[in-house]
Image (cartoon, rainbow, N blue to C red; front, side, top):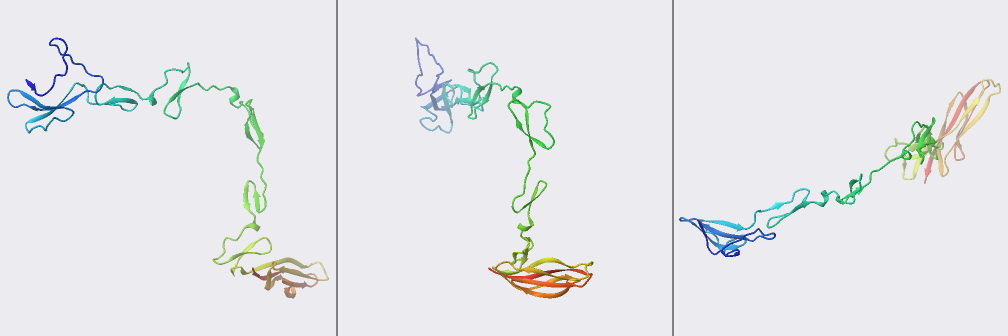
Length: 289
């Protein structure tokens, strides 16, 4: 038998009758030291809370007393509430609750993106929502859309045209050769116009560089002509450049003149009767920027 020392009476009612009920809110907790030496046990140093009025001795046991029946109830996933003392409740977390009112027959619930659920009506469709069957576009056309009655709208295939500096082959665009800078220049070289809508790599320092310009390709003579022929080819440097030299490419032509001409180079050649050849001048130009 245990004797309780220093613990007050919790409650009395009637003549010699004691009634105890579990409270619905905070449950008072007591702590004390239990001494079991001898035939019985003694509880002393009892205090409200989790600690006795003084520490228990080496042969004593710390005990806790209360009128509750739980130590802790925790709310897991999908639940809210719980507690570790007194009267506790658990309830369904609002994020896991489907609406119980305001939904009409046949409606379904959908998330509103904020952790809540709302009633939604079923989506219905009619023939105007779809294209009619057995429709097709003609050769070379493509489907541009569906009108309100479900009829396919067909349009001609897209056509393209090449603008300035572009070439077009089929559906493929490319850069026109006159707008292409050479990709194989050595370090320090510059891209220079050849005067025929093409570019080449030239040696230069800053804005000072040389380049070569080819002249017109000329046919001299006629194998059926008994009189012979004399023709000239001209290669002119670009404006702002000066000619520093030149020459000619010839075959079966006697050169009459090969030298400077104005701001370029001229080559003149001739053929005899019943003979034919070709001649083309080139000029070496110096650009001074």
